[in-house]
Image (cartoon, rainbow, N blue to C red; front, side):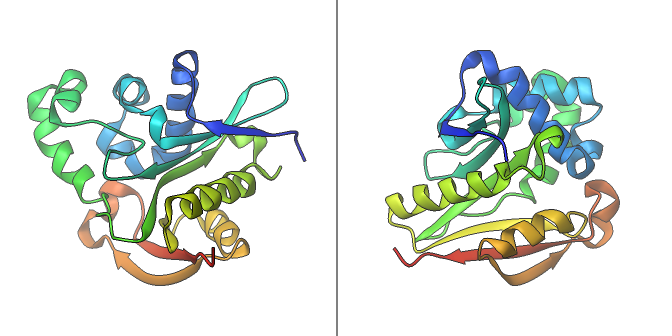
Length: 197
């Protein structure tokens, strides 16, 4: 198990690494919409908002992973149609925007909504994901939420097993239907972690 330090957000100097880790984790899911990689990174680099992230670093300060969350003030990926158009042009933005909107989850009273969690593939299996989830839980409890909620796609059974180990339970499944070829997954399971205070 690696020595970990988890803090709120990330520094501007870490923005390229945060974008790289995000894409490493979600390229299979978002590749058809945001790819190729160079364009995806150009979009993500300014779009990631450190105010809605918890970062895990090793003893040398190297970023190992991030957990994002969403509040009424914003979320980890803070971008609109203009941001998409800057990278993909307006024609590209007009079809990408509605597809990305399908992946958004509305906020609910008393629910702390996670907005992505990702760990550098070189650090997986070393407790980074569990530590980030424990910190997310503490953040949710501080906010007064009664539960933490997230979605996990069917092509990521390892993540689902981690969530179940820390106490998340499945509450429903949504299928992508004909859009499966766009998003790279057939279904997403909604999971919740009840908080007892």
